[in-house]
Amino acid sequence: MSNSALTNSPELEAEITAEYNGGENLSAKERKRLQKLKQDKEYKDNEIKWGLRFKLLFLFSAISLGIAIGIMIPAITNQTNSLLAEKKKQGKVMIRGLTSAIKNRLLDLYALNDKKLKKINSYEQYKNFYQNNGISELIFEDVDQVLAQPDVEYAYVLGKHDIALGHTNPKIEAYTKYKFEKGINNYFTEFKAKQNLDPVYYKTPRVLDKTIQVTKSVKIDKEKSKDKVIDVMDFSYIMTFKSNPELKDAIGEVHIGISLESVHQQIFDNKVELQMVGAIAIAFGILAAIIFAAFLSRPIRKIIFGMQQVTKGNFHESVILHSKDEVGLLSRTFNVMLKGMSILVSPEVAQVVLSGGDLTKSGEKREVTVLFSDIRSFTTISESLTPHEVVDMLNQYMEIMTDIIIKYGGVVDKFVGDEIFAVFGAPFDHPMHPLCATATAIEMDIELDKHNENRRKEGKPPIMIGIGVNTGDVIAGAMGSSKRVDYTSIGDAVNLGARLEGTNKVYGTRAIISEFTYDFVKNDIITRELDLIRVKGKNKPVTIYEAVDLTETGRQKIQKFLSELKSQKHH
Image (cartoon, rainbow, N blue to C red; front, top):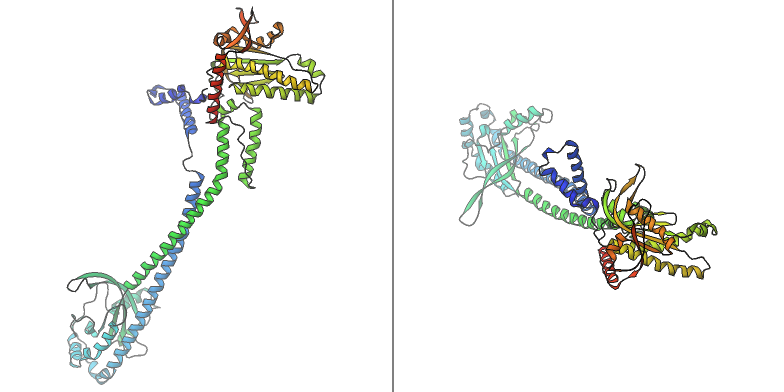
């Protein structure tokens, strides 16, 4: 039996395709309708692409990454600031120490030449003074000692007019005008620039620091070397003999350059460590996300599976969850809904609706086989029973009959009092609807005998029924008002089936089939021709037959069909 829903028909595919293949001439209304069909089809075909597990995994990973970054960036920033502060502290201590040592060496010399120094002012005069008194020789030892300190790249002392008095670079000649590194000026120029920006803080001379880049020669091996640009923090301060110095009292300035390579290396190493810790934290976060997502999504996936089973017509796939949260409440609500649907809605019709089928569209012409069943003398039987006993009798009887109808692929269209109206071939195609409907009638008769045996043992009156089976074209579809719709079948074929059910009273039979059904099943059913009758609403007489039993061929066909049907439902 085909399980394809109404909306998955080739006609719909053709309609949707027409919108793009030569659909330019479609009206706006028609184009809108086809677009809606296309959207409905896309919705039905849609699968979960970014499931809850993926979203939770992404969320937890993003949170873990955010926390790791939020910890690493401040940690690296704080450490960088701390290391730079240490270097500044180191540089200030060193430059004050070097300035103090040089002042002590020059104090006596400047005291003896105080009057002479007041008279000189030009570059040449100061150069001669420095050379004649051998000042460079007096201070070179102090300068060299500074160079022995960790990370110190250079140290130099300048006199008036930027005359080099002492320098750790042997290539620079003493008593020549010093050429400053790129980005650096003499102390006086740098201090005045800062004083203009912050006159309060830079009211009196203080140690200045500035980060610059210098080119350093690095040995590759014993014979080769290469130039390397490094970051250096340049510290500068003035030399003066006054306890409260001012710029005008300066006799020179001192510079010390401290490399930041060790700082950068330490920061890099710490970054690597923090990144490793961050990576581990993210890995644990992802692992926790996977566990949590699986824990959270597993019950939801169970509910989804249950819903998918409902769309296939299986109303017995309850979702058992013991959690006392929103998901647990959802599962219990789903089970209540499922229980109601299993009783009130045909599985086949529900499958069409829940799989996205459109039962509210116009009816369609289908060839089906209808089956009507009615209890004989029901009014007389019910008069001797209490209301509870009447309902109990009907429920037991209809339970047995309904199971047989469903077994053979039929759909219970409706119950009207004690009457059962079943259809084989709508809303789904049924490849053997005449034979299966007739086999249903025969088995209903057999099972009713068994049921009546039990009723007799309980002292209850037996139930007698009449069954009418007819094959023909009907109009099948959703019918009703905007507030209530039922899926049903109407037409002459339905009316004839209903009249055949009542005709059993005339011939004392239980199951009558029409000639239209007989033409399909004559080789598979043992029948007895009853009569040629004219029913109300029909001008042409109809030959009717009593359905007695299945032939061996018919039995084999039925068994094969039931096996295939069971296999389809299983998958």
